[in-house]
Image (tube, rainbow, N blue to C red; front, side, top):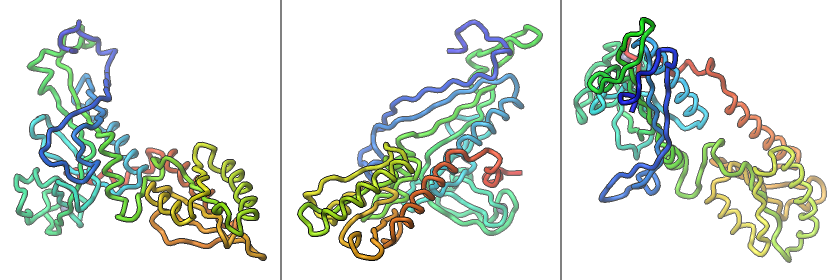
Length: 336
Ligand SMILES: [Zn+2]
């Protein structure tokens, strides 16, 4: 498109254009449920720069954003050097969630932190004997689910297509391009696949539909009246701590606590609070707290509220995580 419009000026660069749209993939057998759905949403971005140097800056900026995003999800991931393959270009990285169900084989060096897709080595079955970065012998294999991909394309497409810009001297020069893709629905599906168990769905904290699920006593139970007044108080306080959109109050009182708790685990709430029989005991009323991925806890109201507040603070911290704190993983996948 940029090749056919009037040449743009260097003053309009860098230019970053993105779209979010459905992609289709025809597979005979859909494995792993949601993860390999035939239709998925993809966010694509194409970037246009004046020089290879500024295109590299763009590449670093987008890579930083991707890394920050995956870190915020708290799903174990690795950034690996990728085969430039079909797309061509000079530099390419993939982002993988680490999972035994992943379809890619990744190689990691325990010595220098280098990580690459096995495709880069031109061999998918044999582990190369030395690390391409440090020549060390400690390469190990892990499986990964690819969730994002970045390419520094250079002038591979812009040159043959005649996509140019007007430089400072007013002469047309070839645009330097990058291409970036992140599988939005795949990120969600793969994160759930990696974090969940057979018994329990588990969401990344920032993606969970609700922070807290509140389950009160069953209708007609002997503790109903007393427990319900505690339940209502708790609902108000929880709403203040988390915000009203973050609380799912399971009011299906005709169902047993056990049945509702089972549903809560299937929906994967980070925190589920049960106000049941032990909530009416004389001295300190105890609540059940089911944190996703952890054992059940019996705690008093203050302790429960303090854990809820901690969860909210943790989410805030994830949301405001700064670029500066994220340098650690930057060396991974980078060959010096
Ligand atoms: Zn190494």
